[in-house]
Length: 354
Image (cartoon, rainbow, N blue to C red; front, top):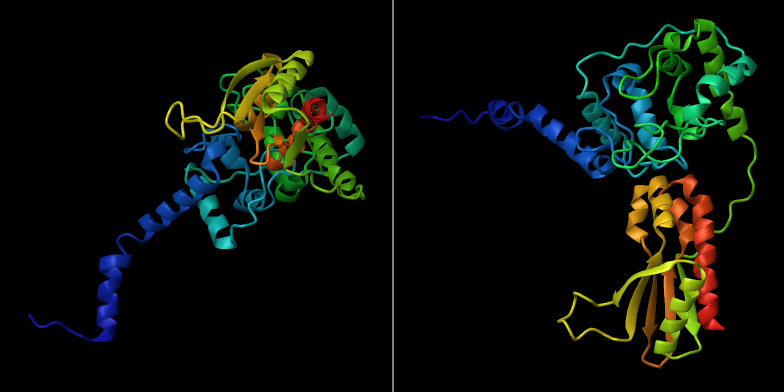
């Protein structure tokens, strides 16, 4: 058989053999992989939610534009779990948007634009009908995403509306559509079922948009990021330091949950370094509170201190700095509890370093 070696013919043949049949499939695979890498850990493999809110809800996908999804990925939700994925370029971000959109067979159906609203009237309506879920200042409900196993007031935590990321992504028309239609699968009811008129909705939209003025006000000078670890040098021997820590934990009305050698499981049993000990401590209430605010806190719970005797005989006590948790998890709700936890760690370290 004679092969036609015309370059154009060869190019067409290669396209149909290798590109055309699987082009869309390859694109879909790339889109799903980008979602799996960047989004699935929080929103679930199929968008069913978890730490992050569900994305595959039909009412959600029918009421948000691709531009809204793009800006949400790009800007995130400062202080509300969702980080800003600024490391993704435009092409990668749009690929994730297409993957999310693939869960819906319907088109985006936005309600017509409304009339100018009265933000002061909107404030009153928001306080009566919206604040119970979204918070009195619109900062969002406490907790994260879908509440699978823990007891909460609502099955889906209401997102923050008084948030620069949300306000940058959501148009007035999107907010209005959400208010009018509600969100099946969440506690969000349509406006009509709450007894709200179209004008009431426009007033609430105007109030939500007014949050931008508050966010644009000058803020205090940013604080220097907290150091990642807390370190203290003990003036006592290794054994005395361990005992002092145990006593200090008890005085804080916390309990020792367990302790183990630092290299436990990494070396043969009996060969562990007996001068490197990890002490886990806390209380059920404390652990429950932190996990309620953010399940990812499980990475650092129970609380732990590491005691190590160095080659020169000095005994060091180290711990992760709780003041880093809020920034690490992009969760402003951790701020208060992190400060309380920092006080506990600091008090214990002061006891052993006196």
